Length: 193
Image (tube, rainbow, N blue to C red; front, side, top):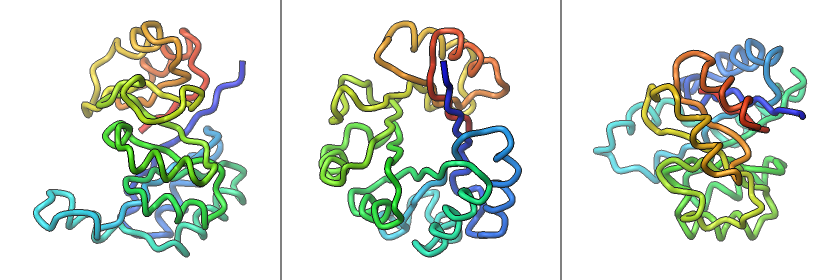
């Protein structure tokens, strides 16, 4: 059985492309794919507690293209999480063939419709939204997750065992125990934060 391991960089680069490249090269020997978050401040309210951070951490499409090329040079895949239907077309413009949807957005009908128009394969986390509550086809790739940071131990195997349609685990726990448990119950995709 082949297992894809995805390393989540998110916005930890703080808007610094050279730091993002350092993450790529630090993770590349150990993972198959590196994931970033495509965030756009224009979709946030100024009073949002993350507004200031995302103002600094927002990358342009050209910068994401540079990171995608860096991932290719490092021999790993490139993946983006989107939060808004408009951003889906940026992923298409970058030439990606799939997109990540976080559990907070998994139930958003407009986002699901826009992804369906593109032919992108969605990878959907189910934590805040159960798989049966999403707007995605049942043959999509669904990951179980717990959205609490850090997540408590002991939930990966339970979630994957309870819902065999989940193909993987998006891990927010400290350490490797939850990833190991997910592998033991058949996870094919592991996303680690």
